[in-house]
Image 1 (cartoon, rainbow, N blue to C red):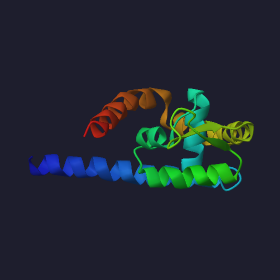
Image 2: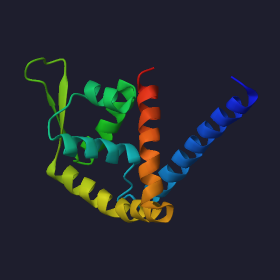
Image 3: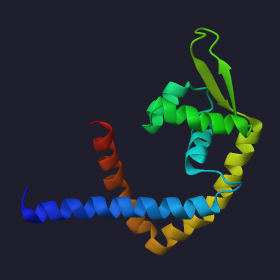
Image 4: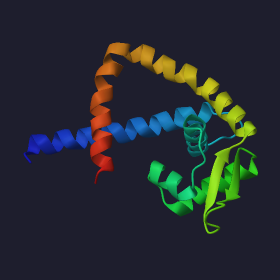
Amino acid sequence: MSEAGNALAISLVSELLTADQLLRNRLTRVLPDRMEISHFSVLNHLARGGAERSPAQLARSFHVTRGAMTNTLAKLEMSGYVHIRPDWDDARRKMVSISPAGTRARDAALEAITPLINELVAELGETKVRAALPVLRELRTKLESE
């Protein structure tokens, strides 16, 4: 790759990493009850999917280790946000579902972060956001496949 190409690639990665860090900081500040982004993400995933998932399935979905997911699920279970039960077909596995309290916590988190997200989209403009989404999706897809 040429020197200009290298500079472009480094600029892209730098912007993505910086934007990720800044967005995470802003979201963390508005999430309710000391909820972490990982907690919200798992609750949102379970609420949208509507079905039980195993910890291994969740770890794959979020591209994290099983240990990291186990840690997140333990915190969510202690908060009463998820139910973890044995898999009736395979006692070695567990299954996770969102609890009514988890649904309420997820809804409160969505209510807290929606104004921030809407403000960002409004400041950037819907046209720019719509134009950026396909590029970001393609980048994510390429990264997932490696």
